Image (cartoon, rainbow, N blue to C red; front, side, top):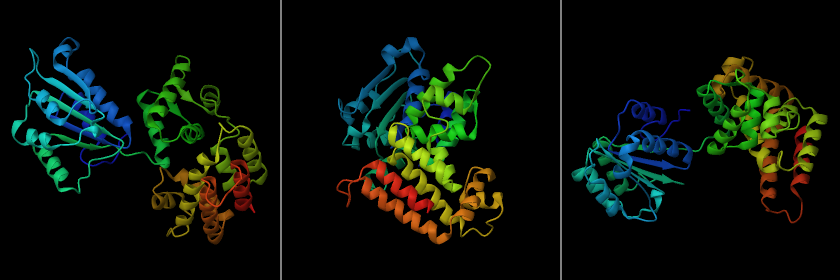
Length: 348
């Protein structure tokens, strides 16, 4: 579940927290709220014994306070406890950060753990004032953390990592089925995985396509994973079967879900044509930065079934269909017809 971020990584922060090492200030920011919540929730649940929280833990919202009030709270001494914890949720609503900079530079209380949860964006470190704030926070031992949205290609690794922590495993197809169906909402993804795990009998911790179909409601035969496979292998009958199923069951798959999926594949396929070694699974996987050599086999098959020119034309067509699906130069063609138009163009 590690992720490359500004400042410290999620894994590094969690290692320190689990070792009982708390920083005086945490700025947790970014588009992905899942990791922000994990860190702030862990601090809320573990930094203080339950009996000390009534007097020494404050959880507030950025829309209800200003930064001066937050700093005033942070400067208090804990009451008969090792430390106090101040957590500000929705800290993106705090406008003037000057009091925080002064606190980090001259007024820091080492007995306070101050956590600012800044969601749906980041503080711009290119601004002189923000850069100065970050420098002072890091100089006093504080933590700056940016939680970035996962790319579609990173979701299978997240799923596998999450299940590994729960001592469970999953096959490749089932993993991709879940990733395709739920998308990059990590909180929802974790919730669905928890639901699947709870449903499994004692001693059985292997998630299969049958389990995904039963518990999450994704057809094991008609899903984005199978559509992608049909297109890679240029299986016209199977691809049209799936598109027809999607048209009749919009919740199972929509144009808004499969367009990014197909675009990602053909974009990578175009890159594969420039690989120094196109025949080696391992070399191609390294070149495309895939998770394993097995993942490169789809691109080797794709290069056999689609020329470089056809791949370029498909990428252009996907862009055109994407624009039409959003209403651009498209007065009345429905999503189902657009799906059929794209699949026909790809396969013929």
